[in-house]
Length: 157
Image 1 (tube, rainbow, N blue to C red):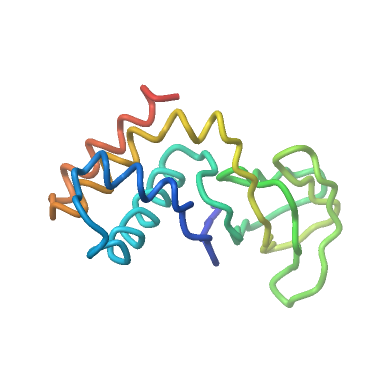
Image 2 (image 1 turned 180 degrees about the vertical axis):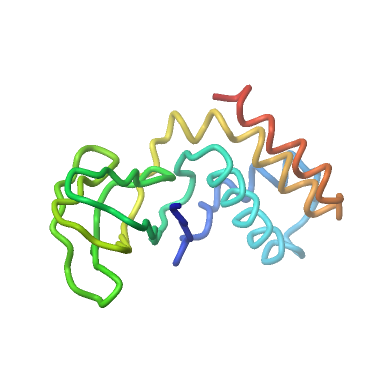
């Protein structure tokens, strides 16, 4: 079993906030702080669902029961490995292979910390989804509605 979590994420670009405000018909700057938080939340939800990097992030992934030659995929646009350690915090030998690492030793548990890379054309395909999701969150839509919006990621890609 593999578990991925986002340790830190940058905020969306100012232009993304302005585009959302136009999409959601927000007339002024009085709720910019709240909208910026909502937009970040929506983009991270879409990023996780679609497995496409939308915001620069540092992520942490933990995989268990690994033997030499096992591969660990770096999800959500994983690009640069910061560290790979076993359960005791010792470095684990690995080889980076595009968007995955190949473990070179046995380990009961490996935690990989890595950063992702946003590929703009891929991220741009998902803009309508994150705009709609952010608007739904702003409007207080229920989780079922948000889930139906996330399913649109498949059509966008």
